[in-house]
Image 1 (cartoon, rainbow over the protein chains, first blue to last red):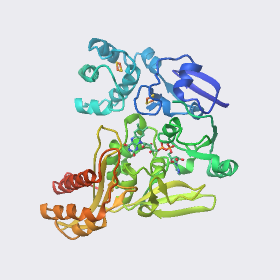
Image 2 (tube, rainbow over the protein chains, first blue to last red):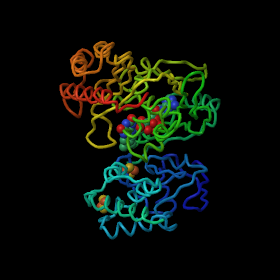
Image 3 (cartoon, rainbow over the protein chains, first blue to last red):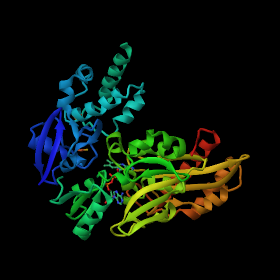
Length: 157
Length: 288
Ligand SMILES: Cc1cc2nc3c(=O)[nH]c(=O)nc-3n(C[C@H](O)[C@H](O)[C@H](O)COP(=O)(O)OP(=O)(O)OC[C@H]3O[C@@H](n4cnc5c(N)ncnc54)[C@H](O)[C@@H]3O)c2cc1C
Ligand code: FES
Ligand code: FES
């Protein structure tokens, strides 16, 4: 077992983990934070996307044991902080979540694009989200929601 | 899919790495970003072993210009390639390649050292380092070696690295030249079905020292010699582009793979050649 001490959603966490534990199982099984989903568990689907040290990453491709000193933010964290409340409202308004399995990863990924504060086109939004699979919506509504949020954010002074 | 039971150790310096590699022998495996290694572990393609984490080794970090070269530490992230001012200034081909590699969340953790060491024949960076005539700096307990990129990739997923030797950095000459990369993939972020990374100089409208490196079309990236010969000294126009396309028959011997038969790969290589060279022609280029 490897000792780790890290921050998860602003709270200090100290644990011992098996090397084979990936970050998503650590969050879900050890900490009870079930917002991050494990889909393919080999880097392809994006359902596990979360923030480590300020950047989005694949939780299923990170050893929990490697996270000593890291700062992890999950969908629970950015929901609570209000950072993406407008995006989440747009997801609801556009019906961009159906079964909801991909949604946490989509929101985490879109949040990074929104934080870059550029003016991406629809094509660029699609490109940014290209590593996140959705088996329900057909993506159109998701791109709509992100685009709406971008528009309303840039309309604000 | 869960990873197998395994050990984990962090090396905080090269000295610690050498002793960890010694202690674990052939059961020890280096992990950098883990964006390839951990995916293959999930498939149980690798044997249980001890992973030795090199991401805390300061000697493997950093982007700098020194000794007339751009030096990228092995731990340089794909995400750094797209945005670092020194990379943009001295090796814009790498900045152009970065967005073609996987997806943002993977680019935020995957490293250039890992990509070169893994040596996937369809990966972008191995082709780019050859096109840019870079030097791979390796290091082991015995010291450093400098391996020209064109000699680094030896066979499918094989490199010139010796056992217990790692990539420390990659150095790029500060030569001003044009560079471009194009690839064809089924979905954005996938490994390419075929791709081309190219650099050349244009002097008074004539092509000097073209380096055309095709990827996804063989066991290793292919530095196309006949194609380069067909282009050297000529002006870029429809005739010279056709000559390069014809010469590719000599350079490429693509295997059948999941994507299709050899003739499809040859076709894609010709299409990419046209796109890249026409791109230079249209001056939609950056100095590499
Ligand atoms: C869904 C998905 C899509 C992808 N698409 C692409 C793509 O389109 N193009 C592409 O190029 N890549 C792609 N990748 C792979 C990605 O680019 C990896 O980041 C990269 O190949 C490996 O870098 P890493 O730092 O993660 O290496 P790791 O996974 O940590 O290591 C890979 C191998 O290299 C060895 N290694 C690592 N660093 C060193 C070093 N400094 N010296 C010696 N050996 C070392 C390891 O022991 C291991 O064998 C994709 C990955 C995923 C999961
Ligand atoms: S669960 Fe991580 S990418 Fe699919
Ligand atoms: S809403 Fe079901 S997978 Fe996206």
